[in-house]
Image 1: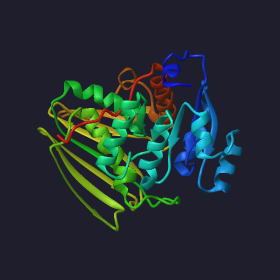
Image 2: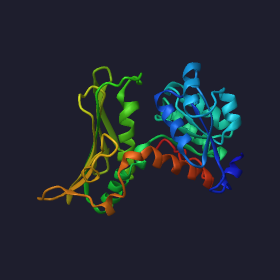
Image 3: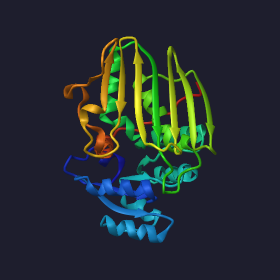
Image 4: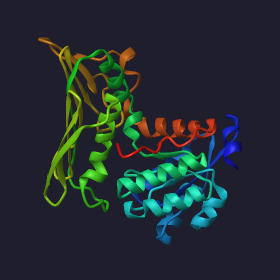
Length: 305
């Protein structure tokens, strides 16, 4: 299916999807594609044949080569190690396939810009897997702060060591989510960044300046308690998001607003939309709708300014 055909696809036409790299995150993408009603998971590939065969069997698809994936698919997820993002994404774009790449987009800013420009020139969709942008709680915060005089934003993404093999430091694996979220809800680009880390890159904190707003972002894989929190300090009130740690957590507790001099007030259901426990499923259909509309790259090339 060409880019033009994808652009003209009706809502009844199946989108052919594949996954390149089916480790911990890649398998999640395979699962979600297999569950989406108007998406066919037509193949997966991985450098580990045993892993590829296991995941393919689990989600009723085939383990095939990258070349075969690109021949079959309209869109692929790239979930290979970060050092291979640039080459793999570029290869997929050269084949005329839309790409969702796990974060970070690449190892360097220049590589990211080159991929964005390549996708834009080809009229293809390139999106990075910053799924927290689709979190209903985060989207509600973005709407709330439009009417607030924001002073600061604080984001914490903390937890104990993970069982899976993780990247070298928490900045690429965890903090990158909240750096993206803060920039998105403020709709601003930073002026300055100062950061420090410890414990061989397993704990890091950064201070980011946006005009007259200061953000602090902390990520950890060595904290013996799982914390997912976003706090906005404004002159009018304090807005706090405590993302639930499990499906079925009590919805009213995850988002509250504290007016000046008063007790916390849970955000009403009308204000908060819905709980974020299914954010992967919300994000993936939205990505496929973008492809169906034929939109070009979601990452537009920028200058150095």
